[in-house]
Length: 576
Image (cartoon, rainbow, N blue to C red):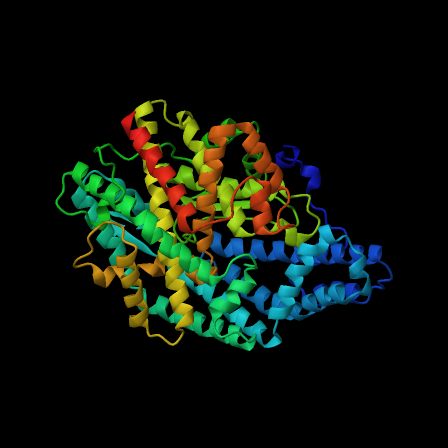
């Protein structure tokens, strides 16, 4: 589709906000906002132009925010970047928040808003009203502190390293050893990483406890009983409730855990061990050495681009565009934030992919995942309203996880040997079962944390341990409980984007639907899906799903049906 093709003429579209403005200078930013606030609005047409210019300003500010955040992620030890980040959050975004809210209010309260096209602006009005309802001036400094704490967590996590086999390694590099066929080596690596994380337990606990306190205050300031209720609305979850998330947890317990544990029994049997342990979960069950499909970033990009082109003609152009603009930072290194993301840049409208590759097959999957996000970002590039370019993640994660699954039919780009491809496909399908369960565990943990905000550090750790029994990996953790109970500290979402996790489960079930439809209808299903991507957030989540030919259902028997599809696929492929 045309919207998925690179077109540099779309870049740098700033119309209202001058290009020579220093976005880190509050006086200059305030001047632009004042000009907007004082502009006459005397018709529906002038109101529309006014709001598009507000979008022009917010696009410039959000991209500046993203680039400043990127500088901190690229090198968590860069004090200059950190100081710039803290300055921007406290001295620019914080004072701008009240005026930006006032600009939105001016739009909503205009008598001409009723004359605007309801189909075009209805969703925007809904989103803006939600933001207005939640805004409290006293929450601005609390948001600044929350951002500072996220930065502290990033620095703590990004700075972790160990001495292992005569070399200093970051924790991303240590994951390689979990695929080693040497069980003693795997255990040693696992325990070394756990011991390293244990050194930061108290510091990370302090960060998270303060975050919980701040977020609870934010919610109560806005009139909510707890942060869960507040955050659910803040994330624009109009179409489902916290109770639906709990139903998802129950569905995974009912439909996913049984088949998954059966798979883990087979793993134990094939490995020929009496007890499956946490360091036995990623090694190849047939004793094959870890796959290493690339060693350099250029190789990774070339191969993933080729897979994308196989999925749909020229789909890899999005990744090529990011490479052209230098918007790929893929390989791991010391003091790099231990996360992976696709960051949409609102002004230039070319996103940035960031990850920590070490040469493993799993890195290919991560880049495919983030490429799915980048493809969706490109798909809604022509949405003039900034809010519509930021899709709800219940839909956005569908793109990334569908690309992961669709790539399974094109792994010959990486591996000519059919036996290796079979191994990769089965591993991926097994990992889907686990991801559905892990999502339930992490989401359930957050529900408890924020509805019991006065808990102690030990109570929080105990709750994680309880959920590890409810949503098990299949590995015995006897004697390791003192390490397992703190594993939640390695999940960056808990700190940086609270409650962003159930989306992975919702979207994984949608991705299974996409994969199944493509099997049935080929390119026709993909074209319908891509066409729907162009809508961004201009319609509701259920409407996005409907237009793509999918069902927005993520619990109950429908979830069970999709899980059975995956287990049937595993059985079919293993029997070949």
